[in-house]
Image (cartoon, rainbow, N blue to C red; front, top):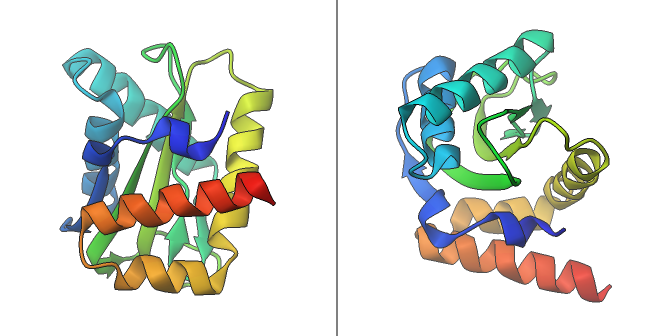
Length: 156
């Protein structure tokens, strides 16, 4: 399973505006629920919050990877957001976050979950790539960049 398999253009958002970490997690849960209804959205939100209580999923350098396991999901799903204004996310370097890839997986995903997180860590460790994500003019350009990274990664 590859990261791009988890995304659709509707779940890639440029310039999102939120006022708190809670509001951000609510937005991410809404995107990850992808029309599954309010119960699924709440279950995903609860899983993201539970994971954050264990420690921030902020990686540093303005990047976070909120993730959680939820019984509301039968397959893995992802969304990508670039915030209009960076937000304090409790990252280890103390820098606010503006780029995040949220991941929701079924409860039984263990190895797949870890592999996806590994791919995300690799993607966000590329400073040139994160710079391009920050400069992309809109959501479609973000989706294209993420797709191109996955194609290049798969070919390497």
